Length: 450
Image 1 (tube, rainbow, N blue to C red):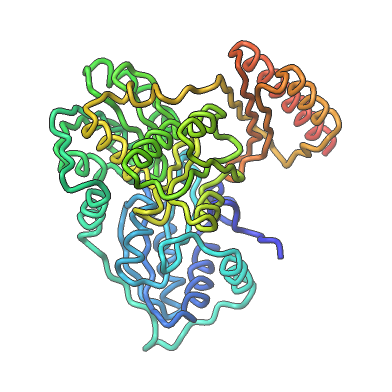
Image 2: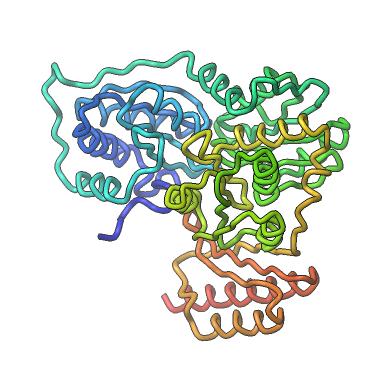
């Protein structure tokens, strides 16, 4: 069966446009409550990021869950991976996150975690969608779900994050600038680094409901780069709005992306005998990551884009480390999902242990020139069109087997992502721009025929 509402990372869209509406969220809460109610537990957690619409959807989900007879615990603004962790520790049926991750404030969405803190199986998502088609029936009044608030949620999660690095880890002497994107990590991430001994300067930690991810965070780290250089800090760390992505900046202001973060963690664990298998990347992972891992005799496998696919492949291979350039990094031996804070402190702990800068650590991986262009689309586009396939084939011929070309629709935004990779930066940029122009032209033609 094809899913109607669930995409690659939950349900997401523009606030006020179906299904990102209060009435749908109420019904979704009820449907999820009915499906999870069959597990024998009677408790679901709700966390959210800092979007203004989170209040509205939290209330709607709460009502629906209560109508299904499920007890609810509210976490308030919490990083997505924190909700996964707390779902496990509170032995809840499920965890719900109200977030659109790295998207602007006018978008929102819902992510679910199962009792194990992992992403939901397709069968459960289909079961929830099937329940949505049924009329909403409220349980008897004496069986309605009750609502409580977990006041120490952030403290619990901070301690958990710290527990993922050796107890001897001491970051004293390191000055870290942390960009929280005015999002869900604003009251958590700075404290994790402070309690590990670092000197912390926080930026973009004043959420107002409208400024989440606005020219800041992991998708727009320019302000972090400037701050690190101006403050002469040792490094910078940028999270996205819900804290499941991380991008870092070295002391020279240079970006350290998810591929490089994965490499640094893999190399450190490999040398200390803790890697346990290989590394999982995606079709978008830089070829330099694959080649650099090969030099260390570390196996590397690519999956489709999305941490959901990375997690599935890690479980299948019984491996523990994977990620993608966007900053989704999964340390599966520590937690059940991508976690920006945990990934970052693995890297910084490695810096402290080796007494090396982030710039030195990233230098061991040589990245190939790569350009990614996002082309906005108003409706689905057929990437199998002869003109598009021919253009891709021609670009691959120009690269002479020393690069890659990939076009794919985003699973979270109305864009087509174009990735070109090769040995010559100028050629890579030109090919990516040419393909982007073709997609824009094709999009215009499709729009004019409807």
